[in-house]
Image (cartoon, rainbow, N blue to C red):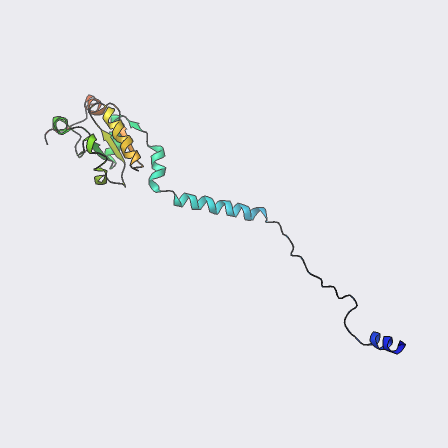
Length: 163
């Protein structure tokens, strides 16, 4: 028997400890610069995904003075007059489109989505309602003129008469 034990010890056989050893993966901390990079990338993604008109809508006041409307008009804003035909013929802003308030929602597809829209009326009440209708319909850069055509003419701005 002694001979068998010596033979076993002299030969290189399996190790006495046959238990399997498993290595656990090391947990590493994410460096702070990596988190900053993730936050910056997310901020850029949000910036580019926000519709362009949304940023402008935050700067445009809900109600504008006639002078502000004149400046926007000269800059390419679209003017929509929500009065009735007879009121329109008595005097309107040159280049404005006539869409009576009762038809505004149904005809909103006629309005540009890539320009600022200013809603006007006789005294400012219907134009505020028109602005709210267009905002509800999804227009982002829309405002109304305070004081309406009365205020426009009181400031000395020109009007066009007739159909």
